[in-house]
Length: 512
Image 1: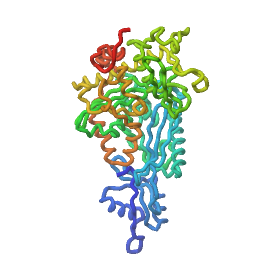
Image 2 (image 1 turned 60 degrees about the horizontal axis):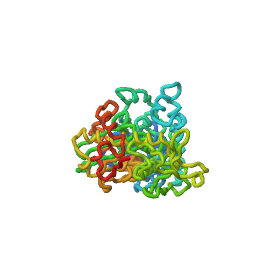
Image 3 (image 1 turned 60 degrees about the vertical axis):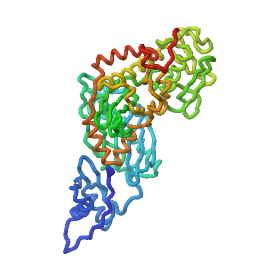
Image 4 (image 1 turned 30 degrees about the vertical axis):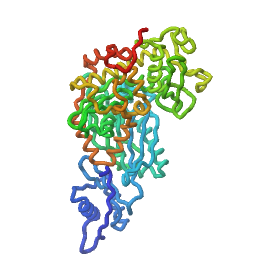
């Protein structure tokens, strides 16, 4: 059952023999059609609904919001509409991605993305939490993201050739900080021990309450979170992967600003999150960038000739390295002997590309003559150091989580890799670095933007909305900020592939 029902109505007109009030008449017919489920008409919509019902000759289509276990009749149309659009939103820290779904057919009508207008206030959630603490910061942050969402809704409406006010519902999937800022809730305590948000499962709002430029009565459903670092975006990933319904034990990895990981099956789920993301999504390297047009997404280095080949997104001139490109590059540098096990450049290993500058060694990936805007794409030692920390954190997060339940990587049926990280990454290169466990490549399954996929599901399926609450109650969350085992595993992971080579039998080890 979708979040908004379109219910055909045919009521007998009033008469001296049947003098029921208009809204009572409408509710009676609608309740009978719904199997006598209790139905309310919110006072804010009552006058318009009554006018529309009478003007339509007491027959047409009732629009009913299915929210928080209640059925709310919020509009009446003279006939069944051709489409009933609803907006699914992935509320990202840097980018917003959204789709328009037809609640009648389940088809996707449009899809678009837009930068998050909060970026000028800070690139990461911690910066924005500090901004929210000052003066009008919280209000400014909320206004910025609402403005971006409204621009995105206009883009979607234009693509689908519908009016924005025809968008009848919205679902929002995001990390806890972004959800707080979207709702105008103070995130102050989320970055301070014991890291408690104001709310994990916000109640459904109506669009007009948040200033959204869609139908004012549209329900805004926010996917619930579990803690300060585990939000609705990861609940969405569980929905999209089906992790919570499988008999076998599997793992979900979602890398964005943080690395968020879930382990489990239909009987139990355990999760954690840690700061492994920025270097993996290209946010730390000087030439790093998010996966977008012109970003180098794949690189190969011939171990003997040192010849470099690369591929950019949309095959445009290279302007930087996204996370998957950095992973490919560093794995290739290791296998070609240009860096050692510590992730340090080896002087003289590639005279044509490894240049000694005043600021240290630089590896030239793409020369000025071949790069966008004549700006060479280079990798510096500071970038390597950031990647080594991130890859160590990633493996430490995964291995710490498994140790909590006493299972090995080899016991995993599947590892789902979400987001742009999963869409572009080559697992073989990530294994070479010691970022992901040394398992058959068939174990790894990319699932795309699972945050958006989950947001679409909750618009269309009552079962998905119920699963959200069940998942929330089932998950055990491990706080890595105070986990000593994680710190020990992190230290052991800061070599390529690892200090314990037996964990990575498929990766060659060189004595340099």
